[in-house]
Image (tube, rainbow, N blue to C red; front, side, top):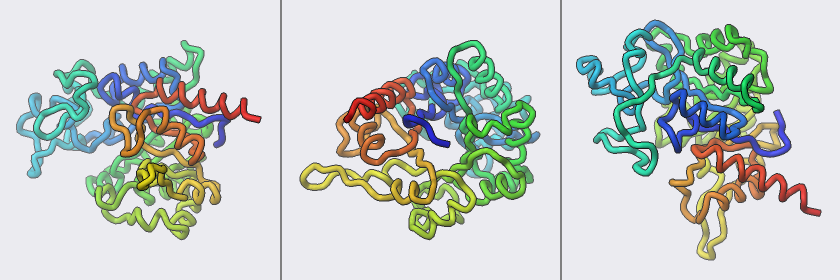
Length: 325
């Protein structure tokens, strides 16, 4: 999937402005012109795909107040332990740290929730409706969160996601849907068992994050690792600091060749996450960050908490390129 200019993926919706993964945040992202809107998906106890960044509920909902006795031994509240009917009783709020403080203190206030947790089907219906009522077509960018964990709980997350996409008539829309995961096995299941035609993106974490215990993400970024990814996926979603690594003693940007090597294998590159209020070291402005990634690194799109600002910068640099002799 190629485009004339880099695409803007609204990371958890317009999450710089409204609580992440709420329907208001997704509607705002659509209004801001995001090309794609991201859905992180986990399953309820009764197997319903819901849009939530974590397998845990406590960071972004009032679950501890509504169901105070339902934490597991580790003190966390797992979405898969709650039915959809129980999830309906929760309200989402701005992300909080374990001590209850807002992770991004200058964003929407971390007050008690003003919106519920949507199902994947409900979010698709919202985007379908907005695509019809507005002069703008946004696509879906679906991440299956912790598919291996779901398997240990007796649930099949990739199959459940594909069923919702099929029911909504989005399962063949390969120009408007991406499917992503940190877990190669989930992507291989989608490609070989579920036989999806939708483009697949291998997310790349740092090994220290323990995002997927059985995956060596350092090895994945080698030539051999990228060769293996290209066998089952159409692109990579690297952490932006795997492409940019700060500045040298002279203040020059230090970049890696990961994007170049991925492109050489026919893989698109969609790095995450662009945040105007959390710039990487050595980057002085949001515009400078986009210039580096769009012009020097030639990425194909970015995940952004600020889809309006990233959209404007994508257009600016695309127009600059067209005007150049």
